[in-house]
Length: 94
Image (cartoon, rainbow, N blue to C red; front, top):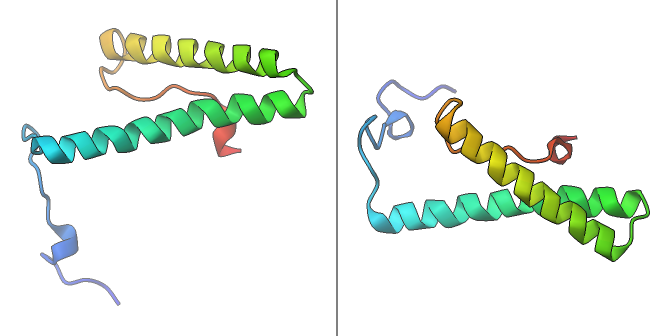
């Protein structure tokens, strides 16, 4: 069954130039941070274990993943599409 036009689900809460209030922004920031951390931490951990790396090598891989993800994000913000999109390891989606 389809929703009638103009239902509660179709409502747009913020316009293109609107900003949510501080409490919602804070919640959304933490939500995005936890998603980003999970994406950047899980892939090096799983990959390191499957490759038989030592704990030190897994930690180094995770550090390098953080560094490259941060640099890629900054490049996208200042040079690329200007959106703060996470450029993390692609293995999370496999």
